[in-house]
Length: 217
Image (cartoon, rainbow, N blue to C red; front, side):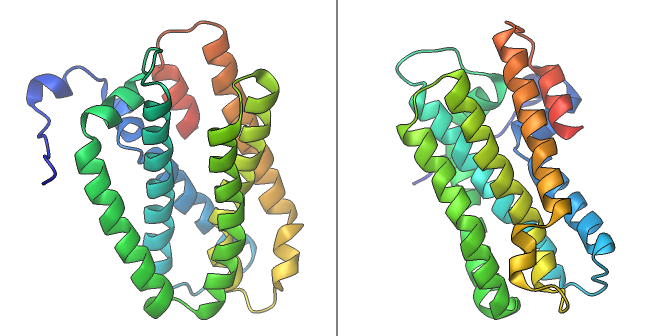
């Protein structure tokens, strides 16, 4: 039986309001959906099923939650947890219930609600996601390793954001997505963002509130 803990009013007061999207791993899904809409406008895709937007947000949320829970597991032997990791560790049961429910929705949407071509695009994105988690598992902490991980994570995020929209663009072949200037530029922005946050940590900044705001920015 999974024990779900209710956040009390006193616990809510421990965190500033702008940090809650980061604590709940909601910032990345919001950014993903917003940029997907931007890509749909840039590529002239005027009709997209609502299931696509929901699936994109849910899928990104699942990956971010699992990534943070993995970080918690890796730091179990030592090391101070950041606020978002501490929060995920405390309420891991509730997050895992959300992950299982989200996986169920994604499976339903992929098999019954979205076009079959989306599965092919999704498989391409999952290669980068799998590579990212492999690096997290096997890689050694360090500036070079962290930068490589940031590049793979940024490509996974960029292609993941644009893949569903690209799949519904009838005049855009799949191969064009791999070299799409808009997606590669977005991936570059993500690398800059993640590297800036890493640099912030290397500088010894203890307050991560600004890093959370930077992530949304």
